[in-house]
Length: 334
Image (cartoon, rainbow, N blue to C red; front, side, top):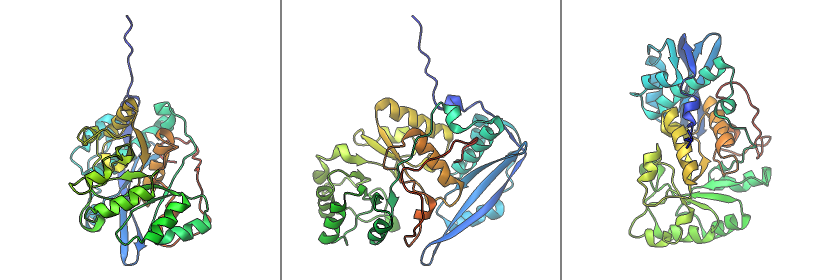
């Protein structure tokens, strides 16, 4: 009997040759809210007349500044493969590792004259996306883009009138309770709020609820809609969930290594777990990279990977609308 050998997605990339002459860092920053400036760092690997770019998305502004000032001295020059270069990054934080590894994948593909789709045997598809925004901006965004869909973070300050208006719009695909977060990003679990939102949005995904003695009864018959995001960094995190999900939010930068990301894609596909993409307020090449991945692996989902122009404090006109069409090009960038 002939044994069927299944080649993983990562196997199609791991041995790609990679020649690195050196690298440099480019700072990015933007005021994304009044009094709050977001800092990012673009990592640019170069070799044989090509450049590969990745983005470090750590939210710690001081850590970004230290990296920009002192992070350009790693001994990365030489001959590698995608896999051997990845092993050199194993001591980095996940966000920084993703910045280096995504730049390396971009450079290796460009040196080989391949697009990511060609390398992994997938075709780019028109990309569906939603917009994650403050609820106070929804009405204005809808005036400018009537077909726009949303991912929103419900709060205890949502009035019955607001909930009814949003529900009537039929435009909310995901409600994110941020129950995995604490501190400035998340609120304490609120069973009454959960019940109001679950009942008002019966077709929306319910992301990152906090499962407590109070909230679990509210969600007991909603498991088919519950998805997870903040705690997902590799496949073993899925195995540790209280029940197997029907869908997950996949943020590539949380995975750190290219291998962990593509192994996760393969395992979810094998298990029939749907995916939708998420972003980390990327200001540079990281944004087009997550759009490219979503277009290849889960184009029809409610992907929270809207074009950069939607990540602003006030709605603006003239932005691309869904579905977003991404043109194939060599490298790991759209």
